[in-house]
Length: 307
Length: 251
Picture 1 (spheres, each protein chain N blue to C red):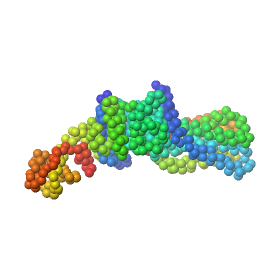
Picture 2: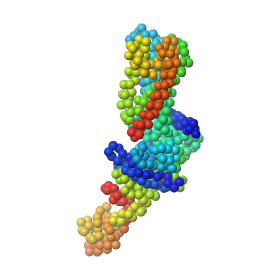
Picture 3: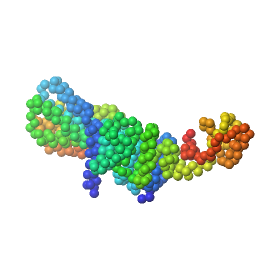
Picture 4: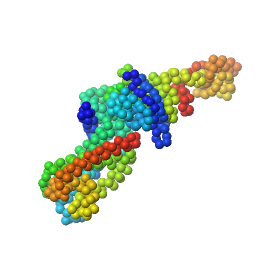
């Protein structure tokens, strides 16, 4: 099976609002697929439709070869889901939550115990396995949710903002584990606001805006599609008047970031010449001069209009 | 193949049941709503109406205890889980809505058959004899299943506020107690009262309990048993269908 997720014309409406509007995409086996978009763009709604948590109004989604609407139990058996909000049972211990999940997936007790032990250990929770979840920090809860999502050894893992609002250590640990998945033959469908995370983790990303897919490609290719966002980072040995710098030729837009300037252009070569001329005429020394490709964040802003 | 799938889903429903028992049932409200509240109603009638015999009141207390225990928590599980967002976790697992509902029903059923030990012990302590213990046990088992399913119907409106569901639940449960022959024997009810009572499953269980304790019954025992089984199947089917329609609206 080449594609573990196949989505055709998937649509969800809430009253008059079309939250997800006839979207189409495919995710290949072993990929880390990022699903990006601003708040309310339809990310979580899409993820919930793909995991059978809510039903689509139109279109179809095949998950691991099964139609999620018609053969939901077969599709769900081999997927893992990490929802956006921590939803382990806070009145149960970490271990009891793990055992509950393994019972819901029909995993034999011995196998479940071995997996739970290994997962809790890997995510640094084994020493707290008998503690009730209500005493856990947000990071610990999120790590437990990831353990719960992996107890059935899924082929495909859906994660909704898995590192949002977490401490650095938890975020790093979760990222490390996600990066190991493709080597284990697992596919990841990841929604995130964090462009840096998407850039570092994802093989491909889709950008959804107002319920529609605005772009879908490899992060580097997406960056290259927005050519006009080429920019140059420059800094001088002393303060420079922003107004006078912004008036040199080939500058489309100028931003000041600390002691540096980011100058956007459609002519990199011309701008470099203009900057060196400007430095020479004003008796300035150039301290740094770097050409920058657009970041994924800039692509995102360009495509969604989000500032 | 279908039998295997059925057994597989049944095993998974035991996981839901265990979770419910750990989280919702091993807490005070079940004993308070399931036994203490019926006990206070019993005491009110005992003190207020001294001409009602003890065996009549104890059989009513047993009926109320099964009814209130089996419907104490089941109506609030779905709205509570939706509110704390654990319902999403359950729906994302490979279990059907029927399996989920059945697990909730099993948890209610377990407590519906355990808590009535208290009023039975109270009855024995005050000298009430149980003439038909097998019929009583059978009746408690069937009634616990029936009322557990009834409680799940009460939880089907897609409200995620447990207090709203509890209010609806109380509005339905309390009138039923007074319309089901617990404090007023069916034979003493007016004709319209008998007609209304005949639509309540609690009426048939109360009749069975009374027969088990003092040998007096209004309906034939076979009718009591068949009607309770009928209501159990009807309520469970209705609960499953209603939850299938409303559960996605909770997310």
